[in-house]
Image 1 (cartoon, rainbow, N blue to C red):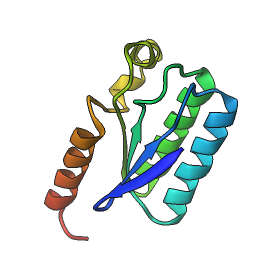
Image 2 (image 1 turned 30 degrees about the vertical axis):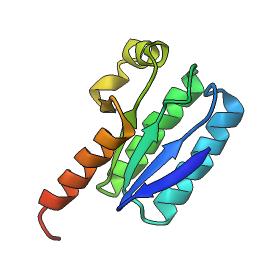
Image 3 (image 1 turned 90 degrees about the horizontal axis):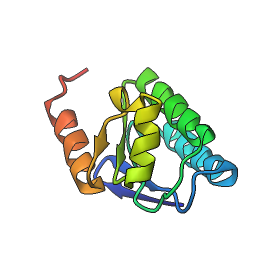
Image 4 (image 1 turned 180 degrees about the vertical axis):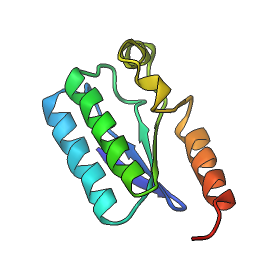
Length: 118
């Protein structure tokens, strides 16, 4: 699992199939980012070739947590098999999917730039 930052956006890259141990690592990484008050997160799925219901459940729970703090969580670079599973579960309606992590970061950064001051 790698975590990188592009300006104020965290890019989390799980490696390998999203089964229980990878899901646990991803959960720890996402929870840590939320505790650090990182509110713009891209989950780059370019290294993931399989996703289970545990992985989908984690992504949904992480999205809810980030949204609770007025943040955003999006997905980037999933392979066709992963996209198929995400669509079968209907999660593409609430978890935006971008072709690359760069595009996802650009969208999140642009949204920050136009957000009204609090």
